[in-house]
Length: 458
Image: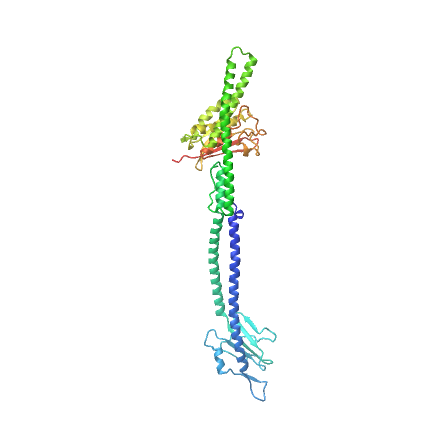
């Protein structure tokens, strides 16, 4: 399953993105509120100290009222206590002086004089300053270092980030658990449907919450599977019953045909008619037997005598059995047999191998052609391949060649006397052994059938 197509991961990503957005917005809001509160507190302290600086300016004498001096009152000295690391500082400019008249010991060097019209509060690096113009050419400035507040805000940011990350992880874990729990019925529905598609029609979806939407869906699907199982069972019974009912009349037809051929009074025309009837009856009998076998396999009533065996030995016997048929069509059967141990019914697996070999021989139309059968072990499985260099199978026919009565007439000529059930029976036997069978072909360059069976564990 691709990541971007997974409902679970799309829900998880959406939930995670939404949680990140909420946590980021909340954390940013908390940080900005605390930052604003800190700066408002500092600004209030700065504004509270400015009037004391204005009151500390006095004329030098009565005759020189424009000449002013600065003398801080003892009661205001505590406002600028230089003994504390977070002390406020001040700088004073008077009209008659281009440089600061006075400044506190804690004031930094090179404080620029504010200009009229500038905002009355400014931030210079980690310094927060407020100033006032009490008179023409006069300026008083109060400042405070915000280094401690900046450190506190950084610590707050780390705390917000850490708590946000923890909440995000817990939220994602909880959200993942909730999503997995919510989608668990879908997974169960998918697994059950997959097992039903492989032939386990008795399987049903088990959902505890029958009142939810998925529970209702499971109920509908279970009812559908019940009807499907009943339809398949009815079809299997009909096939078996019809085949049983046809066995007797076919046997009667064969008996009369044999008797007619054995009669001394029969002329050549009668013999030809009886021979044609016998061939038709024999073909019908083979079809009936195939249908009965498929019905037993579908119903699970076919008994398998499972035992350890070497697939190569079974294949060698089948190859010798079909060599005369191949010789009649000027074909060569080649074997490449390596030991391949498995556990199964030798007679049933021999039927599968024989079906594949005769199928390859019957559909081969080139003199001197080859049919190759090989066995090997691969990835814990016993593997059988039957390949030929015949006309091959068109791509549109490959998905259906194991269907019952299906013939790819456009790719291969119809085989006379064959029922069209050999590959269907072979697939049913292989799947009953827990294996798989597949076909591959490039039209015009032959076909290859591959059977994989669970390998015998020693």
